[in-house]
Image (cartoon, rainbow, N blue to C red; front, side, top):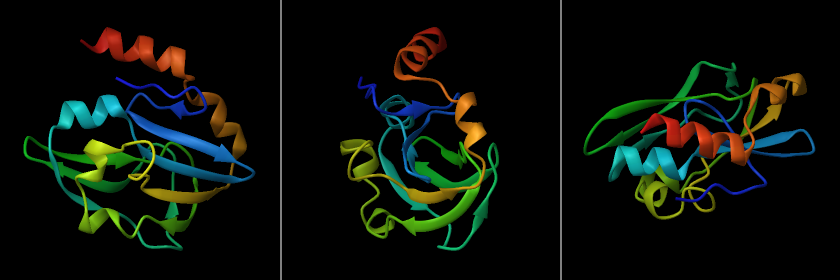
Length: 128
């Protein structure tokens, strides 16, 4: 199980890479492992306003359909166009190839509510 140090995490198992005022968002290794084989990904369109704590997309696996929650509020500025055609990337490369969206963050104070890698790893271990 990987917990990259440079990322921030949510209790719903999304990860965030924050650079300048743009956040790249995906789901964690822990989440993809729990979901099993991902067969479908639904993402919002560029220009969509998303709100922290609210669903912005859907990941469907052979086991379950799960909402993906926005860790931060902002406007979608880029969507991973390859992901809907290759949803298995969520399983094979959750932190690199399978990023989902990039947003222009509207409230950087929301970053304070995210966990660092050590806290998230501890959180995942307590979930078992």
